[in-house]
Length: 337
Image (tube, rainbow, N blue to C red; front, side, top):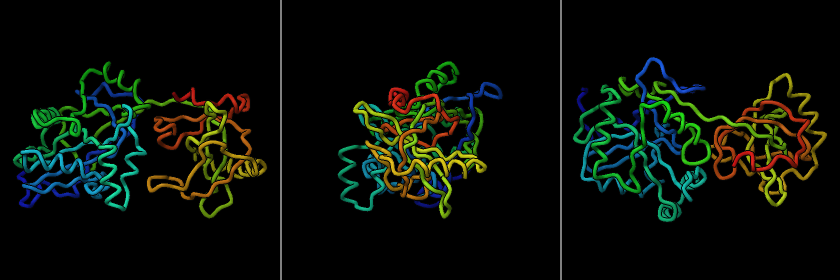
């Protein structure tokens, strides 16, 4: 084992987490494998020295000020000099709320403190980088790190600090995968059971449950600095008959942009979204502009998506095909419930 560094924390705070590459199916060969649910939250490395506590995002940016309740929980543990890997989630009515997580990224400390009481976060742990006392486990196989994590949480797990489930049974993992995409998880992660922790490397495999839905185009955005369509804004009809914005797709072939732009511009001037409408881009958004063009709700597309949260597609979707055979009013939320 590598000796711990002589500073206030057992590892540098800029240590990057081990990452995952995407696959379409869960691996069976070249194992053994450990399978875990893929949580829908903020990836977080948690560090505790002799007294100090620090939480870091996957990007290396500090997270502690946004989640003071988790800092307090880790601070209260009677253990010192350790580092853990996990996911911060906020659950509302039994489902993860990414919107609630985003609301924490607020400049006002008073607002953050209020939310930490109203919607407290959880830190779900799935790996141990340094065992209490400063024993670095990066070179240890996952099986050994998992035992250390279970021992660490023995007597310390609770509402705010939890252990992520794991299994070596692919049938259980496939069951988790089928149940993901509309709750607290958005897939399954596979990790080599006999290999070390590899900071910054894509040494894991993630698989998401992919589903499809037919959506109405309620508007579009232009490419940044160009008068050609960059993304299509997608909508579904709610129970009240209003068209709600649910996400976007930007997988448009370059040789189709000119014709599609002309087609969409002919539909401009319509009501667009009559229910929930697109807002400006958030700091997490991949869309470059908050400006959008409403169109008459006449066009339907089939898209592929992986996760729904707060009645919206959690990520950008993949455009599969146009559906001229589908009436816009047939595009309802029943498809994604």
